[in-house]
Image 1 (cartoon, one colour):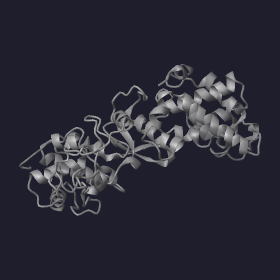
Image 2 (tube, one colour):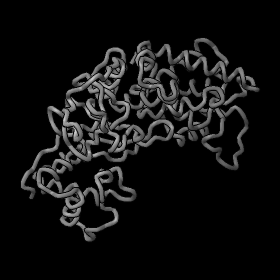
Image 3 (tube, helix red, strand yellow):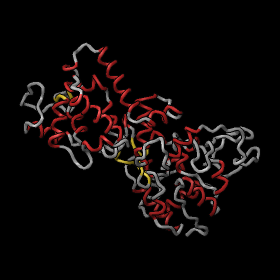
Image 4 (cartoon, one colour):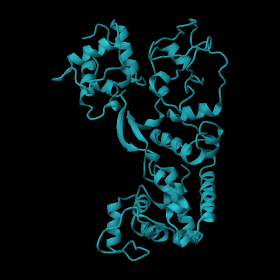
Length: 395
């Protein structure tokens, strides 16, 4: 058992806790610490190739085949630190089965899923100079790129000393002072604060922000990713993000209409011969991975559905004639592609053209008109998590 046994902090990064254990117990290097832990772990192969050899590979999400070896190491650390396994596991990042738009994989921690693409390398992590001065440990949220301003102290995160400009390598040396000029990081000089950056960071951290959607934290990260991809390219951290959601969903619907009008204007086919993807692109598929799919949780999907419903039934728009594939239909019906196939076989969903009975069509084959899909939803697929009532809710 370790002589000094600090407890992990709830908002601490696993790598930060490992560093504190190493320093508190006088290990000469992280490598010696890891070798010691590896030798004491319950494994027939202490030098297993799956054993982490560096701080940058110790977290659970780094495992390529099996996480078992890393779990054993976490158990050993918990035992030696006289700490419950769950306390250390809670600060780990593990891979999630949930994906975000554009094929982004997710990272899971304490009930929240964040796109892995948001995670910064350890040598690029920024710090809050005020937080690190108050308590010497690294907060996990600092590792996510979109979080740029401390939501507690309302100061920008920094990666360089304000005094001499030297890079801050917080995972190399856990300190609150610059190793070059000895200036305390908390003595911040000339860092300009942008209110929009603070509001977005506070919102991503789980705080209520009046101008932004009051949804789950995982969905907030999904919305940020969706906005970056679909709305602004890489310009995602300024007033544009705040303004876009302040008048939700008006700005979003305007964007959909503009894109639709443009695609139809350059298309060579009439609307009734166009596929859903030709008219709307990958909008529906991307919106179904934010990461929740239920309309009661996913405000983007709900806005899209409401708009399609209005266009199809209230405004009698020709958009109702566009042709959808089974994957797109499954998203609107909040079902599976297998259920869509069953609806087709039962005659509830009708293909716009004759389908060969010799082989099942691909889920990517456009077969069903939007108006038919919406009619099926109205008559058979409303549920507590997906119904017309949700269309009237702003968030």
